[in-house]
Length: 526
Image 1: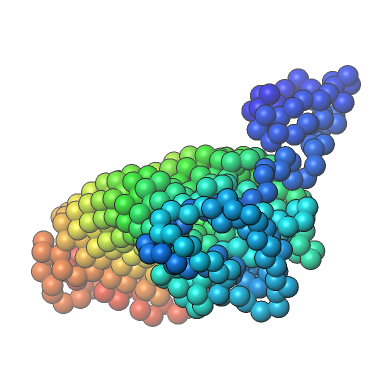
Image 2: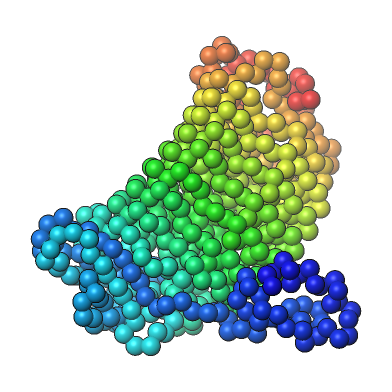
C-alpha cells in the first residue's frame, strides 16, 4: 500500500493490543514498515534500493579531432576538489581508467579527442565496487576557469542520459560529512545546447544523519537556453518522510531554471508533498524558490505550490522563510497570472517559531509585462493566528509587482489584518514592507482608493513598539503613472499620529509613498 493508505490505518491500529508487529510494504518509500504500537518504523536500509551506478552523457563535436573535457569540478559540500577513480567509456569503446587524488580544484577535467565529428556517448562508472561519493567530482564549476568549464566545452553537452540518483548517496557518508549542500549546484549551468534536464527516478530514504541540503539544485540548469522541460523530482518523493535531522533547505531550487528562454512548464513540486510530514527539525527555508523560473520568457503559468501544501502541518521549528519566493518569476514577461498561494494557507497552524519573513515576495513578478492581476494574499490571512514569534517583516512585498505595466488594480492588503492583531507584541521590524510594490505600474487605476492599511493602527493598539518602520511606503506606487500628475509630496498628518506610536526611529516612513498627491490616510483602506 502507499503512504496515504498506510496512514488511514492509524486510527484503527492505535490502542489495539494485537496491532504491534503488523508489517506492510510501502510502495511510495519502497520500504517494509512495522507498526510498533504508536507509529510506523521503517526496516529497510537507510538509502533504500540503489539504482545503477553510472553517469551517462551525449556530447556533440562539430569537427574531426575535436577535444571534449569531462568536467571534474563537482561542488558537493561547496568544496570542488573531490577525488575520483573511474572507468570511462567513450562511444562504448574499451574502458579507460581515470583516477585523481584531489587536493586542489581540477578545472581542466578529463580530456578526450574524438576523431570523427558528430554525437558521442560517454559513460562513467566506478572503477572499484561503488563507494559513497564515487561521483562527487563530476560537474562544472560556476566560473569559466579551465578547459572543462569554458563556454565552448559546455556547449558540447546535449543530453543527460541517466538519472542522477546514484550521485546523491555521496555526501552523507564521504569522510563523515553530513552535508549534501551544493550537490548539483551549477552542474550544467551555461550548457546552452542541453536539451534534456536532469532527473531523479528511484525513490529512497535519505540517510538519517544528513543535516544540510542547502543549495542542492542551485543554478543547476541556469542559462540552458534550449531546454524545453524542467527537472524531474519524482525520485525524491520519499526522501524526508521520517527525517528528524534536516535543518537547512535554503536555496534548494534557487535559479534552477533561470534564463531558460524556451521553457514552457514549471517544476512539478508534487513529489515533495510528504517531505516534512513528521519533521520537527527544519529551521531554514530562505530562498527555497528564489529565482527558480526567473527569465523564462515563454512561461505562461506560474509554479504550482500544491505539492507543498502539507509541508509543515506538524512542524514547530521553522524560523526563516526570508526570500522564499523572491524573483521566482521575475522577467517572465508572458506570465498571465500570479502564483496561487492557497496551497500554503495552512503552513503555520501549529508553528510558533517563525521569526523571519523578510523579502518573502521580493521582486516575485519583476518585469512581468503581461500580468493583469496582483498576487492574492487572502490565503495568508490566518497564517499567524497562533504565532507570537514573528520579528522581521522587512521588505515583505518590496518591488513585488515592479514594472507590471498591464496591472490595473493594486494588491488587497485587507487579508493581512489578522496578522497584526495577534503579533503586535513581537514585530520588531517593518522597514520597507510595501516599498516599490507597484512601482511603474503604468495602467494602475487608484481612483477613489486609499493606500493606508488599517492594520498599522492594530499594531499601535498593542502598546508594544516596533523599532524599524522607516520606508514602509517608500515609492509604493512609484513614478510614470499617466493617470496621475507628478506633484508635490502629500501630507501625512493622520498617519504620523499612528506611526509615531510605533517606536523609534520613524524617519523616512513616508518617503515617496506615491507621487500623485493621494493622501494615504483618509479611508484606512476599507
